Length: 341
Image (cartoon, rainbow, N blue to C red):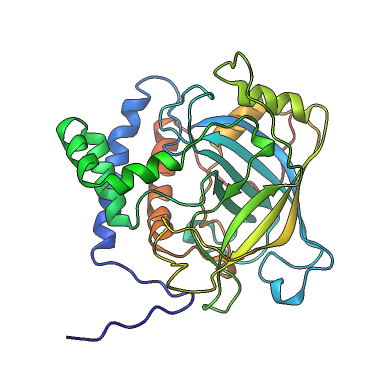
């Protein structure tokens, strides 16, 4: 028997038939998405409920240590950006329900060749973060099996739940109630390259600088998170520390298993400032619905790695194109910040 090679830092290990599992995921989502929205605008499959698209500034410290100056993280670099806050449920639900929330960041003005063939000359860079440090399934194949059971429902879903209790438990743990998006921590769950050294891998996090915690509203409306976002940003600026977390051990901090939370310390590499603003015009909301986000909007220095990210490359492209065609729209990346009344 051939001796198994030890895991190496930053190394990907692609499971057999991964491309087949990815294609099954794409076809399943394409079949389901129009059913969620039989009339009107078809929303995105992931994180369809948008609380708001807000303007922000992504600023790298002037005194960032040299060893952290990789890719976009050059000392003093500053990028205007859009941030889309969202709920993850595939069918938009009341904000009081437990859910995973999303913070999708799109930097504008990032130079350098991007990884996606259709977007090589774009000037955008995306970060996709959620309110859980981990995901519920270990691999693309595991996700495809859980998705198949979920969409089949009935006895197949019951049998899957009974035979995959760990997935069920992780799914329950990764959702929670949220009282205020601007006081919430967000994480990438999946790893990325950090510069040209392929032994270096990081996960991302955005941590609020103000650690206060708002209480839940006494009588929450179904869109109370949006209302709080509107109210808070009408009066004050808000700040997040953008952090990286390095892989220190390839076994205990695996590349290919997003159910495992890494335990290494976080290092601040940028500040996100969300300035006081009004963002809830119909035009700005429409613009936010049209924007597409994928972790593959990036340069090679920040390449997404691991099975989930490899799947995202194909799935996000296919579903974004599919959704835009259903809506009679053309997908395009911003070349500069837009301004709305």
